[in-house]
Image (cartoon, rainbow, N blue to C red; front, side, top):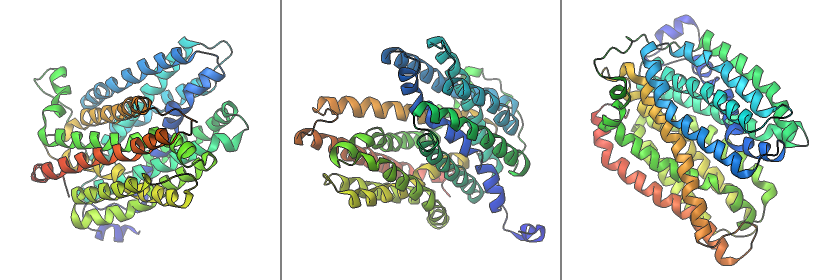
Length: 431
């Protein structure tokens, strides 16, 4: 687009290049998140030789500390009001932590694991909190904020797909694949950071937070903000509903479908469908509003999971279609909630507190993953399911937890969103 054309564009709209320059940074952030949550436990048990219980205890402590740190990082960032600088400055910490985690030296033990987790989580959390707030503050209109959010989440899906596929493609063993993957990760960080610094739209200038309230009181502001608190509640219910099938996906494919070797294909269908659907959801939201578009996506996901209950051994085509449908719904799930929060932060009363709001948002995101595992896995055990045991009752229990539990939670999320829709719209955050 020429400068003249850009000048004639409707106010608040951003060019594709601006959106992609901002979204590009989500690729390495998502690329790093997958090994942090998926590969590290197995790597330190198999390669370093630590016990499962010890690795589990360290990971639990590190993840709880990481979740609690997000609002604190956000509060500190709001006082500095240097979104772009803090986003980029935190990236070297993430890179160092990832190198330390995925290339443990000889003699590395529990202290090394704990230290590298703290380093990586600090870099990731400080960067992501400010990166999200940057997107909220760079959009001059609701459409602009939705576009920035969609670009970020679409690029994040690309990062997840890359991180999922590369370890197996690069080496015969997981440990070697993860080590070689680092040499792709570093250029990704450098290129995306340069694009974001050079071409991404800058956050609008805001006054640093100055308040007579204590830091503790300022940190709790999002929890006293009724429209945002309602949005957080919907996001939590819907997020747990999405995280439960993700937690037990591999068990479902291996034991219900008996097609473990096709897990990668199914995951690719899910994530690619989510990315492909993003432009359609953004267009729909422009006509109906984000709340109604999000409600529609919950219905699509509910239909997909309802179908999954009836599947059995060998139902590959049907499950592939379910992955596509649920992936389409994913596009809305990852775009509209943070875009609605970004719209809320456009209100003058919240404008300078984007960091602490997104800090609490990140905390809820991480708790969703923890609660999904805490609900799904014990429930499967209670219902008599054991991995690899092809008992009809156990497989039925697996199908029920995989499909019915998300439907119930999504139904409650949709009902709550419908009930609080007026409050959100009155607050001016839905379109």
